[in-house]
Length: 125
Image (cartoon, rainbow, N blue to C red; front, side, top):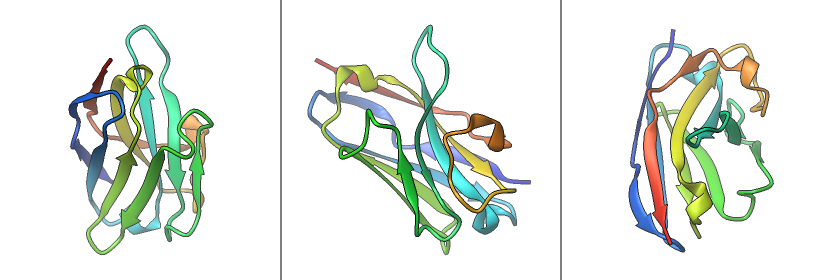
């Protein structure tokens, strides 16, 4: 079992930055690939970024590559999403998710068994 709690969301102007954190409890965090997803009103949940168990490999959706960075600190059981150059279209609820059966992060939502409650990110123009 993995319990996930996101924090760090908020309201920011376009061009600004936010850093999301996802604190995990449970024994399997260090053995789980992790991912960040987002869901805007009226839209499906979509992949944002993923990271392998070790943190050595990262994966990004095309629309955030070069602006966002995912990282993890296995000693602190925490995964981060640094978001820079934010745009109004980045407005969404952001969720972290754990994929305990996989070593590599993936955009395949079906791989993720555990989800946090989400944190709201709002980018004003």
